[in-house]
Image 1: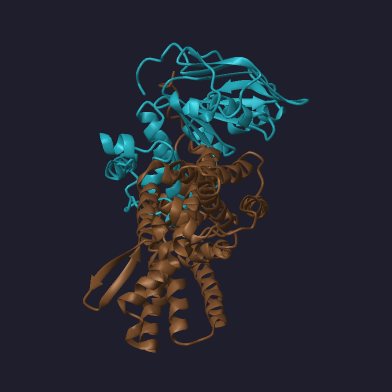
Image 2: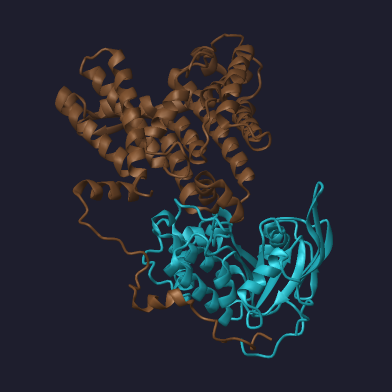
Length: 264
Length: 366
């Protein structure tokens, strides 16, 4: 993205609070994602970053606080609401059905039906269209190594499965893609492939939230890094201005965070 | 803001990754050793799961035709096999839907008998017009299935336990409502001949002799076509497979798995009630003691038909072929003159071999 920075965040959380009994998972947390950027989200285990992400993708309903999508306040009651609003999540376990084909998986839950009577009343699936579109989505991401769109997902390697999950998110995520630990289960080469995929999506202008424990990966692709600690955003840094050890030090409380960076 | 700081020295692949430029570009290459013939077979069967029951059906038919001679392939005998498997086929279709969701329904037989008793008793004894009595029976099956489904999805009990319980409950209701009486054929014929319709035969004339086929058998095939269409050509069918394959993944992908399960159990119940209708036609009466073996026989047909008890894999065609395999074995062994006990023995053997084969085929994926 080389265009002028947009004035307002595409996705923003303000003063989000979520309590589980006595545990406060989110403590007046703020969050913002700018258009076209890759935002890394890091934090120790238990810092509340997965609760934050779940609140943003509708899987958790915060007790207090507001979420804005493109400047408009939204109230997601379920992940379906967030998806309908254009926020797609690539879950760590990928949420693919191993025994179903690649095409079936890509359209799972939002199948295309044949036009006219057959589709409307007989619910006849338009398999040709789904296969064609699935192939287009995969090849536009450079995932042509997958030859047969009708082969089952269980026959794919870990990296290929990740590719299918990313392609699905990119196909339907019109506004934001959230990726939860996309490289955690992958080898060196496959991780690289996924990072390239993310940069490819960014080139198309799709903003990405990357949650990861892998500092080199986060530092390589992120434009900004959101550091979460004790239930809130403690710092927002740029990878060009801080080192990985700074980030880890801030994240674990060994170093005083810099004043929260003002966006723009 | 995104245009700043894009490529300082630290961006791009890390040092240890620079060597990757010389690496192979294929994703996860393995030494492709020459696959053994056995491996080729394993892969073929993994991709075409219905092939196994088909091969077994053809082989067993050929073997029995050799053992017992031309009698086996006589149209009359083949139509007899078809009639014998009709009940199991219909109930097996219902059972397939349930097992595809990684569940099991032990109450299918009880639902079937309960529906047949409700239909016959309300029409013959309670004097309700058959046009009402018949839908009442189907509705009974639907409600029974719905209860199973609600207990599975909302009370979160394992399907095995739920249907073990409702099997007893529906069975007790059968005895209570029927007062342990059988409604005789003459009585049904007199007031509610519609209930006998599925036992009506039509003669299919062939050069080798006549083959009587009941409307029940035709209904079974129509039902299989409809369910096949639903499973393979509609979103709901895809959701059934996905729910059985990996419910968590299905939920995250946006499928309401509870609603899918509830619908599957309720539809299966209604299909069992249709089985009750076919049952009246088959035995010519409505007996509380009929269909005692339908539960386990239906599971047998599903398993031999290659549907996995772990859910997500299998087909309706497989189940019908599985039912036919059992029918062919029973018929063939009877024609060969062996005692009934050897039929049971053979069916037991088939089940174990079928499940062992399923496990072996599934290892491809691991």
